[in-house]
Amino acid sequence: MQMSDTRQIDADPAIVWAALLNPEVLKAAVPGCESLTGTPEDGFEAVVVQKVGPVKARFTGLVTISDRVEGESLTLSGEGKGGAAGFARGEARVRLQPAEGGTSLQYEVDAKVGGKLAQLGSRIIDGFARKMADEFFTRFQAAVEGPDDEAESAEVDDKTGAKKGWFKRMLGSD
Image (spheres, rainbow, N blue to C red):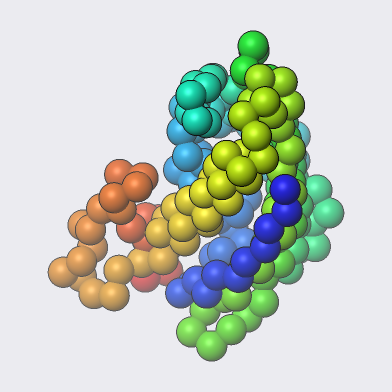
């Protein structure tokens, strides 16, 4: 399953780049992520719980960052094993470009599943993969972008439960 999209993020490319390498941002962005530990250099160990159709599983796996071109592009690759449910493997190639008002983030995702999950059929799996990619980048964008004014500074993202723009504020870039 392959997909691609572009997001306009209201933040400087340097902030978006830093967020892509930040384990706290990645943990907040991955739907169902219970834990994420490690470093961009060595990789991250993750535990993610997901329900795909009738199959609910806890996946444990590794996320690595490769093909890094500082401030411009990288590849996020991950593979998780869900016991009897099977496995999920994916790769997202991310490219950043300065854009008016912030950063254009382009991504191409390739995802594969095996085991019991693969038996659910391509329509369910494809829909799930699209939803996961969209939710990841929606959560990522919410973590990076700050609110437009101080009155909204406590606004909480409905999907992540985190304050919107918390990463940008943490860097003092608001």
